[in-house]
Image (tube, rainbow, N blue to C red; front, top):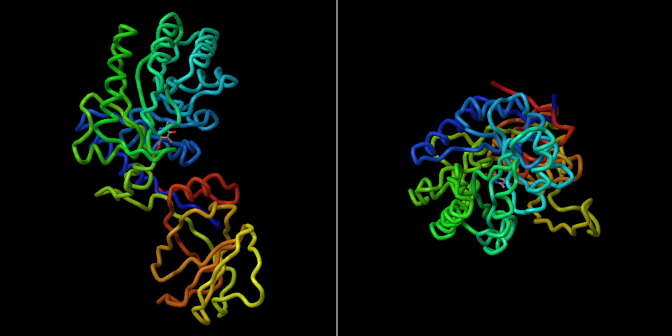
Length: 354
Ligand SMILES: *Cc1c(COP(=O)(O)O)cnc(C)c1O
């Protein structure tokens, strides 16, 4: 069925195995992040089979889909106070930075007869979530001590998401110090020191990650076989776990430059064109509604992506060795943004391949 996204489950399991093994060598367990594929449980199972210790997602709706997989689940986005009951019901652990929310989680956990575990988030300069002021943190910790249904089990940070700050020995060293401080105030031993997302992976490869860090939350690294600080591919992993397949609905020789006065395109941009003369152009039945205009890369290297409107993708097939016909399929490797959009689009068939 077209258009579709082919999902190669054995390749994802392979990536997970390679990467969790590398992590284990350094004493690090992996929380495998499922939000890139909307928490589809069949895909998450490949993570579990590959050696993930936890599953993690930023949306409750996705964690709900994972309820029948028995490993521990982590809620990544700070819970909404309006969703504390669902959070306690579907996540064993959540990341938190607001005392108010933690109190609400405690009440929800009490109601459900559970102990909810939390990881305290600290902001080391990327300026997204996390405690920033140490006095505020200490004060909040003292109040958390009194909550019967909350257990603080870790500290974590998130980098390279808003501010683009790259993890290094200095900021992750600070995370370890925060961990020690929390242990002192709460008089407890933390189980989890979570050193970030796929942008921390290069430190592990370079043996630069502080010793006490024992957890990473990885999505992109497992899904695309790529670390996220510099975009380097990881050796011995697959980069084509997810592929977009779309069908040709028109092939014609046409000019490369539109004819007439150029105003605005369908997305209100003023387009600019290079005149390359007559080219062989194909239209595919997929569009920006499905890919969000994010990066896709044709597997046939001789294809050039020219552009897209909501439901049409236009490619240049002038230099292809293969003689494409209407009805043929074109295959693309996808980046994180395109993967996210394709998985979310109800028009894209999800095709699981073993
Ligand atoms: C999305 C997310 C991750 C995973 O990010 P990747 O770059 O895909 O590894 C980790 N932690 C938090 C808090 C997140 O929101």
